[in-house]
Image (cartoon, rainbow, N blue to C red):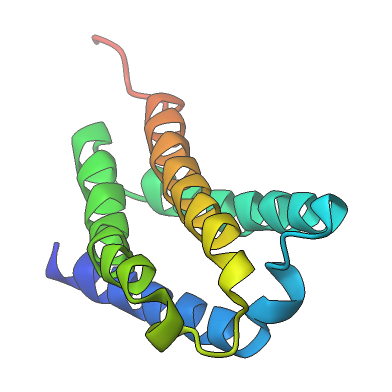
Length: 128
């Protein structure tokens, strides 16, 4: 499971860096259409790899654990990034704070739900 912690940390660092660099364009709360596109793109960008991860593990329990372990570092670290929003994301306007927090909840919810659904969709051999 340690490998999945590192995967989660790497994803969190990459996403935080991307939002720090280009988040101001996408997280402006003034354009609902742009936010809708961002939320949809985020769902697809998260659901596909998480489904692949969950389906690639031999047991449903292992798949669920792996998804939780991948998501957990980001949840814990993003609690701090929301708290210290102005310092962590100095290039984002103050008005981006609420859409940012909403995007985080959305992203982690999509990841967990995808892991749950993908692990349920696995085909298990029936009794012989």
